[in-house]
Image (cartoon, rainbow, N blue to C red; front, top):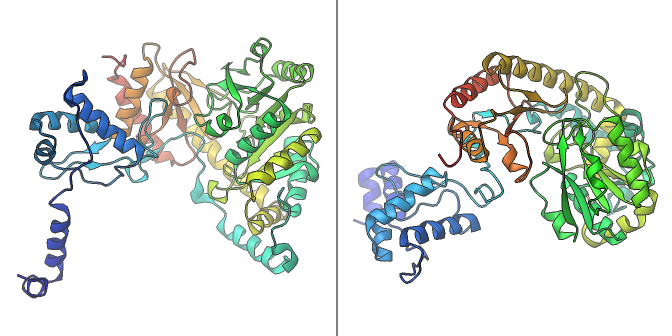
Length: 493
């Protein structure tokens, strides 16, 4: 029967279904081969090669794999061997298995778990998003932003629509100099401010400038951020320095051999401590004595709930510290707007690096942010979000105390997440198992393993409240308490 006759006989819905079957009922051979002379078993080889194809991006999310019978026939192996390989990958969260359907890849290269990272869940699988440092983008001030854009477009002269200064819009740099001095105690001249496409670019640019100045070893907090590829590409080697409830243990810098340091003094990420006054003074002395430089990430300092914000470290040593901030937490990551305040001696190296690989963020968006700051709308948005996040944090703490009274919460009353210490008998494998169990219930969060492979002390969960309602917090804490009640203690069990 040709397609035209089939269409007339069955109707448009059935012909669409028929065509879908034609497309999906047969599968092309996978480009896999097994070595029968290898010491590794055939089943292990098959699982490993499928995993490599998923992690490399060759097998993308949504791709249907051959049936167990078809793949066994292609490879010349028994069907149970293929069944076992698929089942293992499904148990590890890579494949979805359903009776009567071919296995489907459910992660892609960006979310496939690697040896040093946990699963990044697909957005449509998350019911309760408690990932740390995630702002409530639903509260983005759309009307205020549109007004700012209109004002900029009405007033921006045509001469300013060219490429302009690579350091960023002069209008925004002036606004930032005033704002950061007023709110964060940063000593900033517009000539020393560089506007970047978010923090990642700012950190990469800073590390390249550190290297150009002669630094080779960068001390970093442990635990700290999980993504360091741009730092490693700069040529700097990383030296982990442990943290505790009072931030980086700066006395460990003395014997480290570092010539530069990366620090989050106002709210250590991810543990949540605040660098004490004594440690701030020690760090500043170390910078001067070693002729060293620091990169200060002030990622969420606007959100402090128990007292006035701690001033930026940069104010104590503006000739030694590069200050980094962004609009990602205060407004939205999608704006891709960040800034660096650079010591005078580093302006030249920074300019040289900037000209090598950056064109900067859009000028109109930069001026819109300047308008938001200058009009007072930015401060109003911060006050609004501060109240919202404070209430969510208090609600989360209340529910944790009620449901899990034996577990300790760490960190200052600040930012967008709290740190929950897990019981002492939970090891790294147990933490990973708890996270996997939470994810199966639609609860997305992160643990210590994502941010450090070596950090001492108890295992931890980092529970964000930026993107979850109070009712969502209630459901989440109930799920968490149920899973911890029957938790696996050890990863090997």
